Image (cartoon, rainbow over all chains, first blue to last red; front, side, top):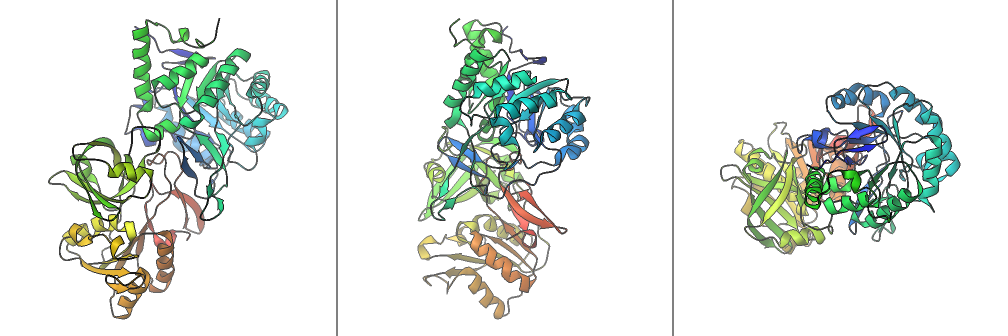
Length: 304
Length: 260
């Protein structure tokens, strides 16, 4: 029997398949379409200290083999999450990873402090890179000093697994990963979306309400695989790989590049059962290839 | 709501660029309500990538079939138009919040172009509920008009409007409807679907008419089930404005609550 079990820092996962933040809501929308307990872990949409109303529409547009989105972190805020969403999520018997964002270091720290000790939160993921927010996130994810300092501040309030989700919108993601590691992150997640724009030629204006957005889907996959490959060579931290994963072969590319776990985002929109399908596909691949432990595949694309 | 594999029972071009697609899927046929939509996977590849939402244009619960009407305008509808009898189509549905009849007679349906699809379903269901129904249906010219009488039982009073006057009244839909009001038509409630500029005009006029009015809105959509927050529209309620999801709280909204 092949085992899909994997480990990202202190976090034990039954399978390496996670949802990408912002693509699966708080899980309830997909509950009638699949067994959520088959997920390796649920990464819920980013929450902020206070509610956010989000960006003006249009918020998304399809692009060749991908999509651009500029949602603007619409979310009901920490208090609503703790009162209304968390109790439901606690009933699921899968690790819950909470994505957080703020406009200042203090906001991130306050979120970490409020969430420390809450039952049922397996890890925090720092959204450092959402390119849709005019202030905040973008700065932290693209500046080594700001990023290191932010991770350190959150680390001081959060004893559980801490994931730094990196933006690809920098010259070299590896430098940022080092900064996150020095600040005390346990896991690196890569990649967040790549900034892009579509012009509406009839209106002669950018199509999205926010003017630009984040590109995701199969179009970004080779970029993401390369970044995961580079991170695996450069840092010791476990990696959650993501970017355009639609099927088992895509997930295998990320695992072989060095990801200990992978996340599906845009793929969920196309086929809500992408994660269960990949879970079954990975198992079949491993059994056919005589691989007993997923870790034999992690980083397999690197020459030893 | 479920993910279903629906069997294509029939597909034909009913007027230029307009297709009628009949799917066999008993669950969808029995549960879909007027105003709701299906989110279709139009291809198997990655271009086009996302599913496409289509309003349900009618159902036959007894035969387990559900009908969609769509205009071939882009890559997604192009693929859809190539379906043949016997093909399978991956559907999520029924999705969204349906129209809700307040109950005052007669009901007036205001349809612009392809926006007629959900109103055909609504008209048929209201007729079956014993209501008096008028359909005002506008398009640019005769060629762009769907043969709507084919999709409605006799009893719905159909008023055509074309901008070139080739069929029905000459003029745009809102003007033709206004004329009917002047001639004494007294609607109990309004239901509208069509291009945004038309809906804006109607919503604006309705500040004078002060009739209960529901509109079915469109927005670019990704997940279709409420998870991604992509299909937001600005809504005002109880003195505050907030974004609501076309796929979940919509596509049907109370016209007076939409920030036009």
